[in-house]
Length: 269
Length: 277
Image (cartoon, rainbow over all chains, first blue to last red; front, side, top):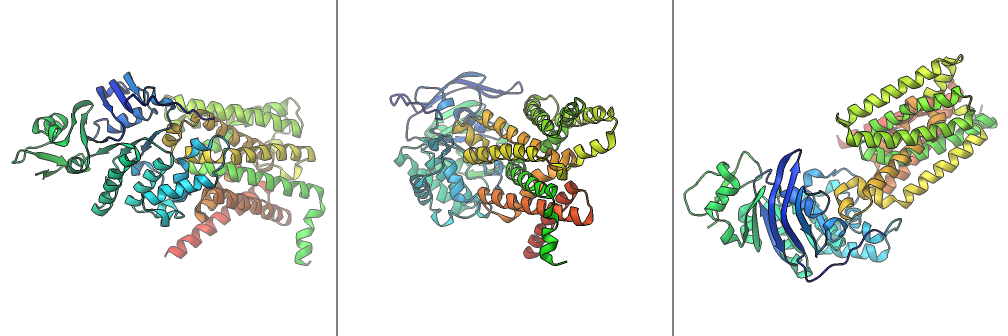
């Protein structure tokens, strides 16, 4: 069987201490420490290159840290199958010959065991997951035919089929139109009811502030972690975004936008 | 001559019967394994691997191995080369395609150099390069069937693992699938497909068996399992049609099979373009 590891339920779902990661000798993450309890929803915000994807890959157990400790329910993440990493849409080969239901079924690969083929109850689980993300009617579509929002919801369904307890979504809102973003945000809002803990990397401070319990400001180091009002101070934002954020009149100045060079500026108030 | 006798006449010969079975087996095995070669962008690896087995086969040939024994030489070289290239391209200090290119050309040159020391150099070299499907013996055919069936069963058994790994390697890793092992199994499967096809299409054209029918099927299907089935059928059809062309128009059999597969690809591509416009 593929590895399954027991959970120490009294431990935090995620506990990170002094985490540092290096790429070719350059620090990608430096001394990051925090922990999460089940059902929390955290937006991870920071400029490009802040280490958001790196953080997620270390948590998912697919990237080894240079220093520090990561534990999931009290043990190293490398054997847990309860962690789902949802890639940026640009990282996916959308011409791969699979249907929506096929992709969602991939989430069950570990549960099926080696050499196992999906049984009826697995397809039932896939149907339930697709129902949850309102994609039932598109189950037999080839994935190249989906819109950006549908692609993102398909991956959330895959994480549900995986029975993930910790979902790491890498820039799920980037490049989506407003209705699609709203659909995903409301879906994410409902996930804690199913006991799912959610971390979302995003550029959009306004959405982070309006839709998440906690915000983590990250720029290789952890700048701040807490409620939106406590984290999004002018001082913290300057520390996270540095010289790239220009001041605009008003107390709460938030920079947002998907591109490194063209930052939009919006008032949160 | 009626169309029926046109079809049956070549099959009166034992070498044509064996050749037909051989092209179908080779076609189906290469087409199914080749699905992953196409989807994972490993065409250059496949081409390199096919060429890299030449020195192993040449060595066996110089040591006097018969046709059946050459299969074992091909298989051993192919498996070692596949795992070796896989390891080197993971750890290379130069770009992966550069590393593969260096090994591929060097090994190919070594193979030709070895064969050139033999007296019947030209004829034998052309058999290794372009295949000799009509020289397939019954014993060779048994080996091809056994190893081909083994490869197909492995793909069937590990279908969902290979699909998950090919579509989203990070998902495969977070599901704690044995990613390294699966990658190596896939390399070995490609190696087996190469060894099985060596005698039929030769090393120079082998990459066409791996990628052309799979690429055509990619254009025609929307699910991986269907892509494999369609790819296998296209390859079998190309093989049979190629052998008829070879028989009636005296074209070398390996190139004839590859040309039919190429024409099918172009026809499908053109019809897709026309339908879209």
